[in-house]
Amino acid sequence: MRRCNEWDCERVAGRAVPMSAPVPEDPLAEFNRVLSEVIDAIREVKQAEWKVPKAHELHADLDRLFSDLVTWKSLLSERDAALGVSPLAFMPTVEGRTAFNLWPGNPTDEEVRTVVDQHLGRLEEHVSIAQVEQPDEGTRSALAEIQRGVAAHRRALRKGPSTGS
Image (cartoon, rainbow, N blue to C red; front, side):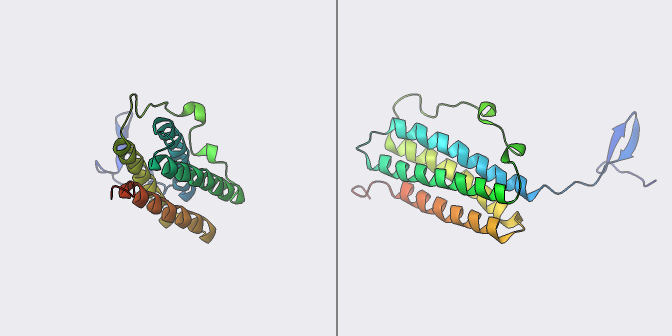
């Protein structure tokens, strides 16, 4: 039996027992974290659309983002189906998601832009991580498409209204 040190053993009934080697995470788990983030972003952008008057340029930006998010959700779901995976094995159902209210009052356009940009930044990070871990080209390609789209939407949000910048 191998000897243990404090870093690779756990205590079982008062004895040091070797721990099993960490199992690398399934690349599809990270891929489906992206899908979960996209679903959360859909909810967040829909909430933002309700807060921003339709006449504002930001509302049009949010409409385009919402449309792309729905497209990305379908793209990721189709990849899961092609790989024979149920995304529900890796993420919470709608009932399991936390309800939130991003803006209880009337936010400014800048506040909406900032929060949506932060959420897209988190999605962009997950996409980058997932893309590196994917073994097949089709999945990497889908993630690359999403990464380009997220970057474009973040640039549009940061740019702000064309009359003010």
